Length: 449
Image (cartoon, rainbow, N blue to C red; front, side, top):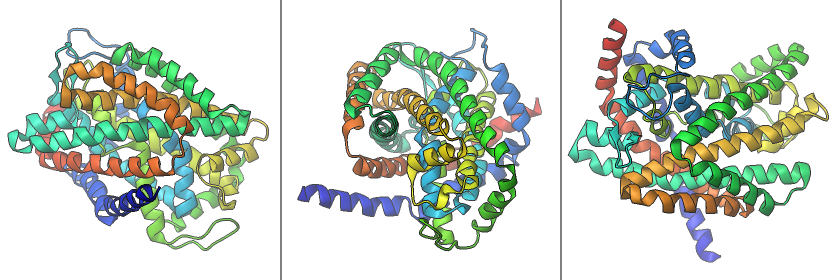
């Protein structure tokens, strides 16, 4: 036990460094540099991105790739829309006050440029593996774009990505569902873990094509249902919206005093938790999403990039905002609750008898698809390190980790996952900055046509 405490203390110190001011500046700064270099294209071409997303549901078969552009986005969204959208937003508001939501929005706006650049490079530098599947992502654009001198950086990304998935993409998700189902329906953690593991195993056996097909159906359904429920609450509390926005914009720049169960927060807390939870939710800059986009059936890196940037918009500007606004207009943000239970309380108090079920169901489906989406990310990292022979052992381990996560005490795993997440981002952000001229050149050529 003594050793565990020492390890936890060390990881806490590392976490404080990797999520400190330098990291937040690096993530926001990279996004900002890319946004300026792209002349604000991600914001100006939102309509174009929406059109490409819609057209991407069907794909010509003669173009290289394994899944449709739409399903590539849904696979990356399946990994992105998860506990971050329900529990993460609530945690950000609990720790940083309503102003944290403003900083989540800012992170998303520059994050659109980051996500766009990631997908462009992933498709541009992708390879075909021994099984004939298209593979790509930060480790491949580092290796093929930056050359031999930087191969170690790609390897570093793959190691962190393989390990981080077991935290952020697997055990944390299983644990969130198990907690939610236990508190709402009194279902044991063990049973939940075993059921999720069985479902995950059934889908995983079909590889990326089956995962993408499941994601392409489940993700739009769950996202639309969740947004509709939240919109209903906001319409019912329309008179509270001006006050909610006033709180968000005021406390993004001024400290907020303690009220009720809320401990008060400095502006730095609003920025820190808004940015950190924003990145945790939309994953822009982490380098995970481009692994899914690399498998898209497309002959144009830029077109897939415009589809990819919509992921950040949908995740944070739409879904996280809905959760955040419901928490603020329902007035429960000062209750002292945090995480998923704060979101649940907000929905329940706004829609008595129904709200709590919406959050529980939303969280369960969101988390299940996150486990599927992240299995692809970690699997491709493992494949990069050890070749295709490692795929089956990896999948077995992935399924076994689910029930363990459902039953474990997760504060330590949250800490490790959060730290590994930041460590994944560092090699990716370095590569994005070094390869940004390639992104700008490809973008300019594409839109010049």
